[in-house]
Image 1 (cartoon, rainbow, N blue to C red):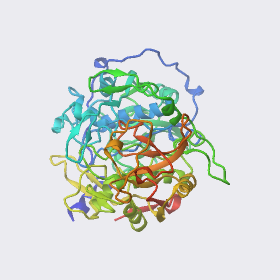
Image 2 (cartoon, one colour):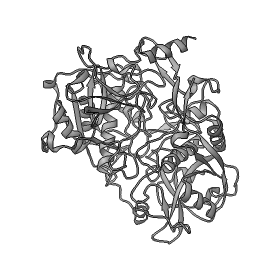
Image 3 (spheres, rainbow, N blue to C red):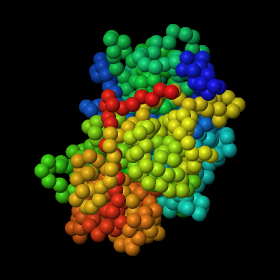
Image 4 (spheres, helix red, strand yellow):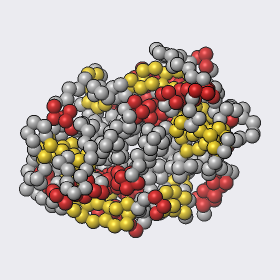
Length: 573
């Protein structure tokens, strides 16, 4: 009953789900690093509308997030900055594979001083930290909704870790890092429009008062704003019915507002949103594969010709026959794949069965919608909580597809990944989609009454090279069982091959997203995605020889046919 009352009051806007997570620093105390000033265009030379969520049909925005789970954390400042910076990386890379999701957890634990972890921080100082020290990928350091102020302090292990079945966690030998080249404060409508249009999203603070009972439309707050206490990323601007607005991404989950976004009137500093903003330009660390090493040195990682071939574009598919190569990371220049995750962070969890199925199904939702302006990430933790095929002790992806058929799967912003079994496995509403309250008890959480729920119309299995190729090219990635060996765990690149004598005794699951031909040997290989993070293998992916059932990979593959568009369920409880 109490959870129902809290939920009801929240959606009426009578209970604030948010405490101030922004620390104001006077402008004259903030350091800017500007190397090349942006050319200022007069307002009448800027387009009337520019939305990075849809530029000629392509989405340049990265994942929607929820700062409030698995417990409340005033981490808006870290999400707004990492999301805007990740967007700018995607813009520079022209939305090519892979999407790079940056880790807000690094800022919460490692950026001290005026940045106070889950007690709030400053977006400008966040960019300063990344400029000085760099940041890792989300799959290196999964969000835990804790910071240095709540006992989760900075360490090499926190910045990037991998854990094994014995419970031992260690820092990878190397992992990709990302950093900031320039950053500065900005304010005012015209300057903000210029920055957004020319270079990408920006992080801004505002008075969050009008956000709590928002469900859609353009906000025009008429109350008195005495200061700013929340940080968001402005990702575009436009005009509707002669009303100019900002398009803003919040960090309160995809069930908030307009699918995680809100619009607010532009040009009048409504809710002070045009007063305190910051931007940053990313430094290119991805082209030459700059990585952090355990010796704390960075260097260029040289790629073999085969690895370079692995990243080549694959275009087109004949309707009458199977193509010689296929890769859902690049189909006519478009990436349809969801982000690379790590099942073993912040601790070991044998959830590969759920990782493979939810990733493949997320990919298929994009493919079946024939769009790249959604960034779907289905919740692994909800599948673990519900025992929908297994737990952190192992399982079978067919259970995930069956659960999707019968009940549907929520997104990560309903249940983010904890790499842990629940105290009791059940599908209580709070274990499927939740939010948490601020205050003395950060663990005061409640179920969310309405959220998007993704279902399938059918599911099944596919076996054998030709059948697997046909399923992948016509419908999207599939999830496959493998016999994971120590050699595969230690994979760093190239075309892997290892025969096994234990076919059918699968201890791990991966998703296959395509196939190609080795430029040197002319041998065919599968392109697979693992769930060990982007520090593993070839940015989280691998290639394995086709046709000899290496690791048993062609023995047992599963798939689901997603319901998309109008058939997607909206759950209400």
